[in-house]
Image (cartoon, rainbow, N blue to C red; front, side):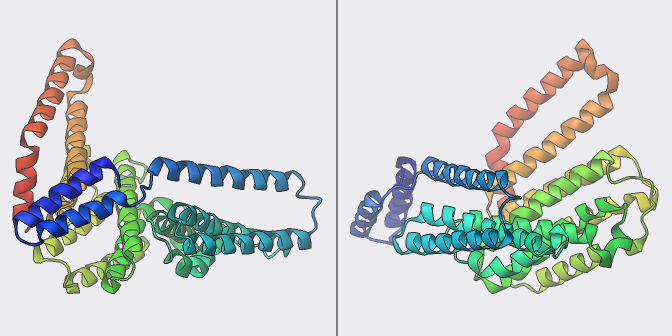
Length: 380
């Protein structure tokens, strides 16, 4: 454990001891135990991952240079030998309690499983789309991803699964009539789908790292969707029939139902999440109502970002609360620059803009802590 972590732990233990939760002898014993534990450097972990990645690229490059001359049977034999060797190495690292090596080898094994699916398809000329390989890989590797001890492997699994689902919506023949030339609707569907999966995972309480990964993907895809709908890439012509939103409605309805029935959410959290989903859906429906005003899009985006910040305040996640408040503030500044127009390029406009930025920074630094305390009390 690093010096900074030890100081934080010591402060926490001292507070617990002062409150009578633990004795001072226990406090000292815990400090001594944590101080003797081997340190795991994130820098070393990063170089370990880099080394594994470079090794994998080297192997792929060597094989690719002679790919056409290698018979299919040898390709598959070599592939399965590498898989078996990696599986043995993963078990060895787990038994030896080498967490960095274990996570790196497990990540490499999962990626090689995906590459093996493509190799088998190529050797036997089975064809198929990329989404088929990704969804099949997600199904056969889900149990392996549960063996992860760090958050990277679950995030990798969840990301590729969501990518496979997105490609299924875009390229799958089953839904071709809904998404042909309307690919931007997937930016509405993906955050709702990730949120629905996250709520389902929360019920089980057995997969906390997968739950966190899906929550992160909900935020990432949601922010991407917000940028798309605000930038006009989604289109504001109103040529989207309600049938095209069918999956959005299904995922939103199921997500809302599970949130309302979930006892882990407080009442205020349920209301905030319902507002977030409703505003996000409404943003994509504005063209259907003939609304194309940039100001209305901006106002709804700011309200959405503040609602997300309030939710994170309710779960006392201060870093994410600060992030979304900052994003809301940046969106307000962008509205200001848009309203200023050509004046922003003049001396007066630049002076006013600079003063506004400096005042905003000062207000944020001055009132950030009281704002956090107030929102946490408001959403308690």
